[in-house]
Length: 229
Image (tube, rainbow, N blue to C red):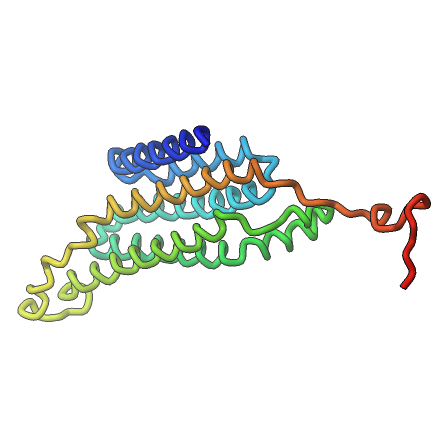
């Protein structure tokens, strides 16, 4: 029991420190996420489901990081307005959120398809973990946050984007509630995401291995009486 409580305290401390790291390093969460998930994948490589979850997160994060770097690089070169750049970035985040939501909603099915093709003997080790359920909920929250940020950017800059008159657009120039708290909300959600995976690794250590019943185990032995109906 004490060990479990110590683990909970460590997880909470880790989530807080990770949130602070996101905020203090100007939202360099791609690098933080990659570092943590790569570590989890390496040390939990014998846990098939955790490994698949980690690989999926790493793959999507690398793609998101590459596209984000491309947007940030091209924006000043082409003198793109800030509202357009922000809109593209929010669209990227929203697309990634939706993709991850759909991927993890079907993660077990995807893992079964992969294992069935390349590792048929490991098929029985694929199952839904606590992380699968919780990550779907977290990515739904990501969709809400990034969707609101995208809409707020459109509303706040409607005079530039849609050509609305200044009289109509001016009351909405101060609509920045999501923008002001975006950094903190995303940091918290990202910390929760990584913490959920770590907590699942801890729980999976105590899960009994699935029983592999071979044909020999199912056939009655000579010394065993056979009951006829």
